[in-house]
Length: 231
Length: 231
Image 1: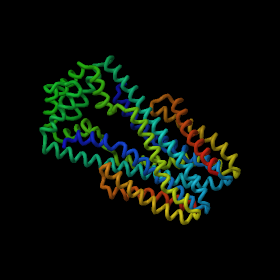
Image 2: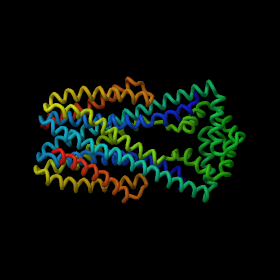
Image 3: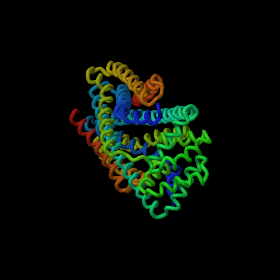
């Protein structure tokens, strides 16, 4: 299978899944660790639930809205860099042409071999700018609509993921019971999501699963130990 | 100033500052919102401090270790994609050559104009693979050492940022007093970091500052409102 097709599949069919996994594995990790930490300091499971929900609200807003604004900044950065290339192509075309030749000389072409490419690009300013954006600056045109839906998916998945470790604290009033159940359910969920994440990012799924479990488990253990020390 | 030099400066001199700003503005946002949220549900400032510190520990591990493992995955993904290109260049060189021609046809070159580029690249397999990685797949070679130091910087900055909103709760036993001081100090810090962030990402600093304040303020207000509702 040609690589180009493979890459395109990778970025279209799985983007939704990827956003869900990103939001959910983060949502599983931090609220889980916070709830575990508070279990080391309080016996009131209602308080763990309140703190956990506050964290989920804060985290999903920070991740969703923060991510959305960052994507919008990227889009503006692209637009302003593009305008600069448009100006340069008009005002200093000879220097831009030298830059093209330099790019290809870096890949072992001689000046004579690279010159026709520069000449051909010069004939079509729009495609010349496209070329400079991609090959000189390494910038891809961002999709603003995609940023919005991606931010929303990540935020909702963060909320969904965060409710998993909190669920046991909503059922059991005894914190120690809730903690054990929360740890079992969450580590299992982290395992599944790490597995799926590994599958979609191309690393061995089992190793992806173990990585996610280790990060979540370590964060929760450290938070628990610290709260125990203080409480 | 040629763009190439500008871009290189952008990515070397400011990477440390960028990591500090990333870690610190996230560290300011979520622990601030959590502390504000808990202030709506409890009168014990000691508990806010414990929950806040547990969140900082969890968040910095998730962000630092999670980020480090993600960077390592990227590096492995690059290595495996590179190996695939190496194989393809050896096994199906004609098809790879067609792919090069296709790339340049997309920028308005004719098959005749693109053919010499393909021929020149074919003469040097290593540079051919370099070319395919960058221009066909759009992948840059990751720096593993940089990923490690970057993850550490982000984690430490998250801790540093997170201590700012918690500081007032460590001094004042009355939660309502601590909350007011925490909000003032943190929103001021968010403003400064948003300003610096704007400066380094190339958006108008004042707008960057307002964005950071709005995300942090909104997260804190939502967390507070939810906790009040439940508490």
